[in-house]
Image (tube, rainbow, N blue to C red; front, side, top):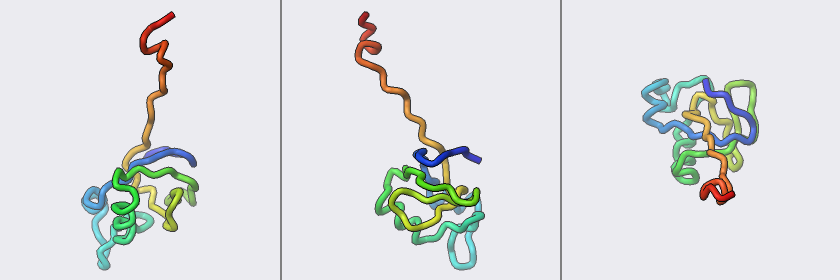
Amino acid sequence: MIKYRTGDEVRIKTWEEMKEEFGLTSSGDIKCRCYFLKEMEIYFKKYFPDRIVEVVYKSNGISFRIKSGGYHWPIDSIKEKIVYEPIHSRFEILDIR
């Protein structure tokens, strides 16, 4: 399981990745610990085409909330935590001393 905190940016798995990993319910939603609904996938495609979101709240160990969404997203939907490389000063890059 991916470790993350409030403020972290994470990439969400695609519908196909989750379907393969967890399977579908009888209503056609993803069957992970905290269901991933078809409406959630539509929301992602519309507002987060890169599938990267910021975690603003962790809830009960199985779900989280994002900055601009009313859903509780399942932790099972997190593919990876985004880690950015530190920005070096132009002096470090050019090796000017």
